[in-house]
Length: 275
Ligand SMILES: [Zn+2]
Image 1 (cartoon, rainbow, N blue to C red):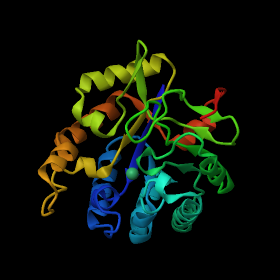
Image 2 (spheres, helix red, strand yellow):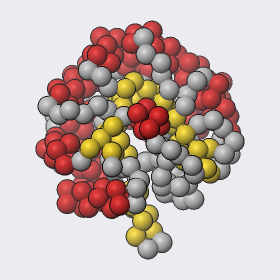
Image 3 (spheres, helix red, strand yellow):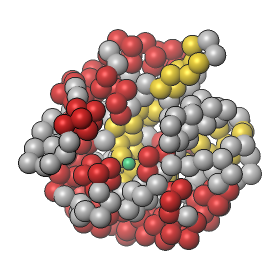
Image 4 (tube, rainbow, N blue to C red):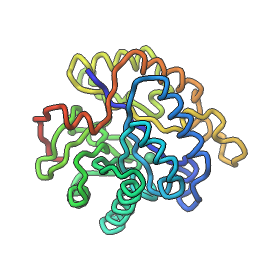
């Protein structure tokens, strides 16, 4: 079983704290560190890059591409899609895809919404993706959380019934009637490594690839240095960041991974669903 390794490329201070701030060099430095770590392994990942980062650091995009990783879109401003609305989303998507394609020369076929910000009855979202040549999306969190997520969504890759798009959902494990997320972000920091590994093995037995998602800033322990961010948020966002690098190395040694683009070409995806 090949799992999926993905990174969302953004600057925490802009994407999470203040949308109006410019992208800082942290995005560049953290992503380069992440690329260096990946170099240690024969692994290729998918990088969902925010358009503001692409435009500021074209050289970084070339580095990601020449290392053999896949480039995909993570919109432009990182504003949630619920608040953007259809026409602003169209512009963001177009701009983010065009800049990635102009720099790398490679076709962009994948998308992930900032903060998984999609919900039911958002047909316009799927229409815009397919109109702009996107073949797969990875924004569905198959568990209802406070701000996002779908309790009824399949846990495995599926096709949207009304649109020519494959969905690669984020990973949750099922115990009894309940679903538990484990595949990235805070879950990867806070859960014991043994549990992450157990969940991935169980996903393999179910023939479902785990969607691992990380942000390069999570690999940076001192990301908040020199910034006035309330300690509660620093704790919530920064706790156990030092665990991420050794854990990622361990996961890369233990499991096999591929890019999202490779998966949609190789795997027969028969299941369909309506969101
Ligand atoms: Zn993001």
